[in-house]
Amino acid sequence: MSEPSLAAVLTIDLDAIRANWRKLAERVQPAQCAAVVKANAYGLGAARVGPALARAGCRHFFVAQLAEGATLRQALRDKPTNTAIYVLNGLQDAERLTFEVHGLVPCLNDLGQIERWGSLARRRNAMLPAAIHVDTGMNRLGLPPADVERLADNLDLLSGIDLRLIMSHLACADEPDHPLNKRQLDRFRRAIARLPHGRVSLAASSGIFLGGEYLFDLVRPGVALYGANPTPGQPNPMAQVVRLQGKILQVRGVDRGETVGYGAAHRFTRPRRIATVGVGYADGFLRSSSDRGSAVLGGVPAPIVGRISMDLITIDVSDAPEELARPGSLVDLIGAEAGKGRTLEDVAAAAGTIPYEILTSLGQRYERRYLGGIA
View 1 (cartoon, rainbow, N blue to C red):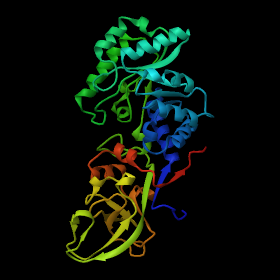
View 2: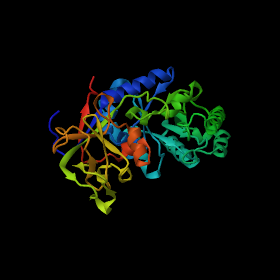
View 3: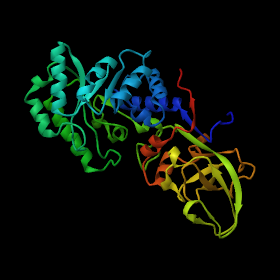
View 4: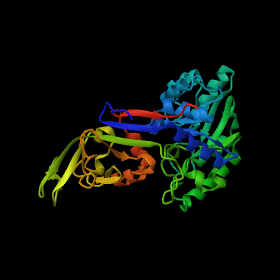
């Protein structure tokens, strides 16, 4: 590996993402497997991740915002023309033309959106594609049960709409024994029984592992594609995707009784060697990991000491090989070669958060290196 030009390197293994997608696609057969690439593919770069997944065989993509869908369509411009891109946040009046121009599929979240999309289709004398999101217990987006019944009693509202998908979203899929999972499954079955449909979709990453009755026609994995564990408390079935390394900028010795960093929050009880690393909370390495997380150097844990600041972390390298604990060396903050080092779950736990936030917080000051994804 060449010497990084910046103070940190984020390596993203596109082949691992593709392997994760293929593993899930095989698991859910005969259902189809989509890919959720919202939030810039969970911070890893949708312009690189999307085409890599398309080459692996993925034909259904989900984003949150219209602009994300337009950007992804551009990235997929030379990929198969039957690739569908669904926009989860639904349809706003000013956006209708953009959906058509870029060939995007809105996920219609209320009766008003359904009425407007159908009205546009009828005025155009055309069939416009859409998905319908029904709410089965998340209470965020989607048609509540009463509106599902209103739609079922007035199916003329769907005139002109090419209904590609009916979908819902599980609130507690990462807790297999949570009673809401079964309640949502039952509500979803009742909803789709009342509505015309082609494909239906309920399960995202963790939902895939709840059992075959949750799979339906299409699954929508997101965070599992990027290496996070969709089965908390069990071994992670997914391949590691990201490796974050920070460069040591300086190494120094500190005596017993000295402190480090803002607020003098960490006081040393014995002489130690500390290294200052060029990554901070401006790079998405969360401040809440202060005095809780750790790095890895030469396979040896190097605890974070003191407060994480905007641009810097200080770590205790007293136990690390001295020949590695020097300016210019790279320490592993997330992941490592041969599976050693801190997992996304480790880093999230130290920060008091979830792997989703760790991934989507990864900053733009890293030197990004992509592996594979071509064949």
